[in-house]
Length: 413
Image 1 (cartoon, rainbow, N blue to C red):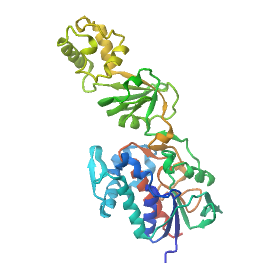
Image 2 (cartoon, one colour; image 1 turned 90 degrees about the vertical axis):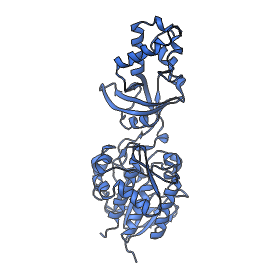
Image 3 (cartoon, rainbow, N blue to C red; image 1 turned 30 degrees about the horizontal axis):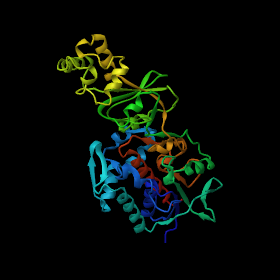
């Protein structure tokens, strides 16, 4: 009969992996989940497809972690991205690799990922109670269990895997931060990460729905006058500002947000330098000599973007191409190569994919995920101050820290 009782708070990816690892090592494990279903947030990730992980080595993985990457070395070395794929494949979930080494289930159903984890927990005999935890029981510097509405549950070890503050409807309401604070832990400032951005520019709503591919997005901090992000890829204009893969990744590098602090610069033609682009424009215009400028740029830019670019260049949209001056052409070039979007703010944290900030990792042992302040208390997943780019990296953080916490908590004291 197992004699080491481990309680896991939260049945997300970190919690389920923690419970599995503890049970594999012979511990008697129970999960406390306030929702009526496990893995609610996991079931909606990747637009319902679930980007399980990223198929890359440890060095590449660490390079994609934007907050406290060094803290994750032990966890990711114990349970790598390749281990994650093997874990699911061995339990009957076929996977596939898509652009950017993103791993998805062949079925394209996130619910299949949740079901695979749930079925494995059932095989291991992990009990799941749909109860809301109200607090931790801590005595003489050690955790003793948890308080529920109607009773107390005692355990040798407790693992907190409650998630962050994003997607509150799935149960991520910041409970883990409350438990951590009560245990004496510091919570670093909580900000949205991997989130769309609102813009101050009045003409941005005119571009709503426009998707741009193969562009370069550079975000500059106007205070330090340094670029905090610059990559090529895809983005989207919305009614409030900008979104899409590049924008979400850029947001992970923006911290002290205030109106006017950041400016996003879009290079519509990153493959062409200014001189080459100028020759391209002259060539295009040679075929539209007597046409209005607004009707002569369709080969160069998306239709919706043309009037905005011309207006920003302060040129009459109905000027004939052959009358365009070199100065006016330069103004067009500037807008195409350096189209600015003045960032106002993050969208609400509830719209973020992950939460930046959380339990300060200085007080967590990276080799075990155990609290340095309270014996027998462990933390894993988004509740920690660790986050990464999109592409399966944040889920991998959850699995790896969860596995390490569970394995560590199953060791007899």
